[in-house]
Length: 439
Image (cartoon, rainbow, N blue to C red; front, side, top):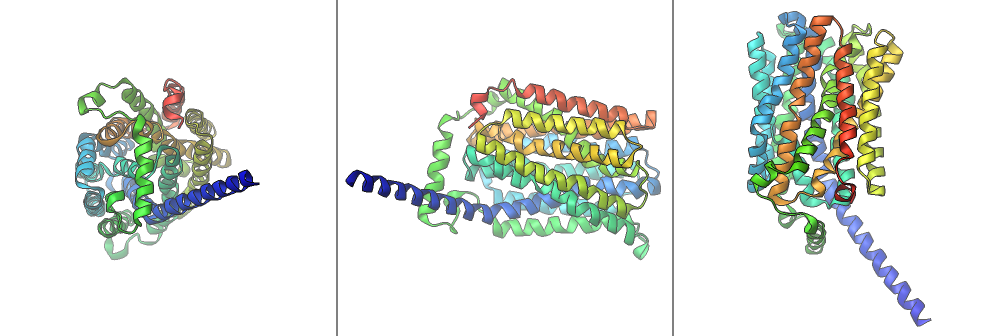
């Protein structure tokens, strides 16, 4: 009897502890994740709205697909150059002010894209946009690792990354509406209004970051002392297996470079969807920008659901590699299907939807890998290194597809190449030891 009472009491105590932990993490999540999602939503919109602007801008300014592809991709050259120092600065000075700086400057430059008139100006503004935005995505990945232990990060990364398909879900129809309805208003083209209007939310988000973000657990006055102690203890326990490494050790770490290669392959598929989806839909015979915008909502909506379901499965099973490989293969199959059935609108849309479901879902799955064994300043440098080198695929992918399209009058070979990159990324994933990342 006494033994039963003790067991019941211990069970009640464990249930209370779990309930307190769940409430604490829910409190943290509702405080920071929706705002970060909004920031990434407007960031991604500013990054890829050039894909919608292309529907009118290329004809107005006489830009070839190669010019467009180079301009779309040159963003990532600048991104590559300053991303590592940006993430190190964020780790040292705090996320609140640094995130605000990033968002305000990229919002101003994005709106300034409305005044581009030549290929050179297009290249320069895209390059400046890359300089301004560099550090945001890896900065958020690092920031979330300050709050959540490894076994909780999959869901958080997916919730944050869900802003990408949500951006397409909301931004696609919105961009189409702006192109359709604002063309000629005050003697400005629809694509000019698109750039100007979609830069303003980024500036507002940057101002909001100053008031809404907290640099870390210890500075979170909106948490009780008990809640801060719980969160800090979990992060400390999660960090016991993570070795502090110098910047030099990060640059010479084979595992980090393997992950960089995997990420490069995944980004090839990711930005193929991001930069070319409106053009690919238009190539099936849809000419009205508003209809193109509405149709882009289908792949992005399906991707949002896939991203959350796959990440929850990975967290529940504490398995990362197979989930990542599955999404990469799904994205590759979708790209192949969209190319093979490009002249059949329904089948092409099915392929593009599969490409978005798989290609966009790879990112939250991937970031569960490096954050599982990198901590502290090593995480800041390692995440930035992987993201900066990997994002060079953001330059290679749109430029290569644009070049191939100008030479062959078809995007098919480019889509097949990007599908192949996704398949290679899936295979490379299994070189990463399961015991390192399945936590």
